[in-house]
Image (cartoon, rainbow, N blue to C red; front, side, top):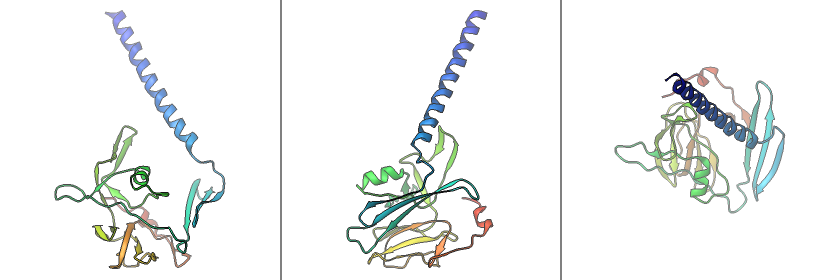
Length: 205
């Protein structure tokens, strides 16, 4: 009995060791795939420029900037459409890559905060792809509103003539074709905007 117990313990510890090693290898592969902390700027497509800028102050951060020349032909926008039902939340979660592949796009950018959300450990998180969520702030896709405006959540509006604006009233005008929400307005009319630290600590739903 004692020998069997010792073998069971050894097998148990061996399994735990293999699991930890697998997690470390997975984490290491993600680190290798991260872009280097170097300045880079390049043209992705005609009228579309990408810039990567590392910062060290006030903390290490990597800034990714995409600049669009709206005077170039062939540039258009698309927002994730909702799938509302009476019983379920209006959106199905998906990764940015899944969105890009689904609509056969050239460039995709993550947008709009959503809930419910939790991430307790790598195997326990919500949502997974396909699970239902709600969006914070207004969302418009192809002229259809799928999420209502919400106080404190700014919205980026794209109108029929490809004019882009961020309205002060947190709601897009009626002629909006695509709209996505965000939390803070960082730049307005080319000028950096002050940020109230209390907003960063606001409670999430």
